[in-house]
Image 1 (cartoon, rainbow, N blue to C red):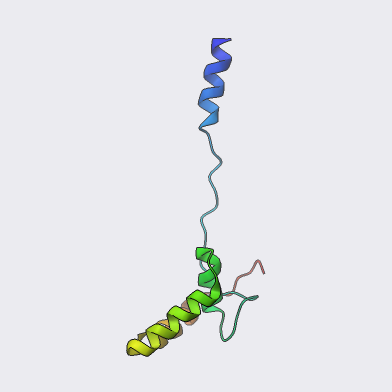
Image 2: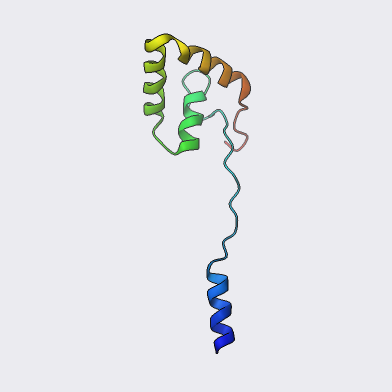
Length: 81
């Protein structure tokens, strides 16, 4: 009985490791190139918030345009969509 209980305690902490998330451009939620949709899927937030953040970055100093272009070049399309 004690051995079974110790086995259950030891195995209750065992978790199957999840696959790490990978950042992709979205194929479903895209307006231009899918960068904002991909970021929203990765962080599990609304894509409108990501797009709003991009507009704020663009209006503050224009750094959002450069970040968007670089990200669009670097990221691949999501092969699972």
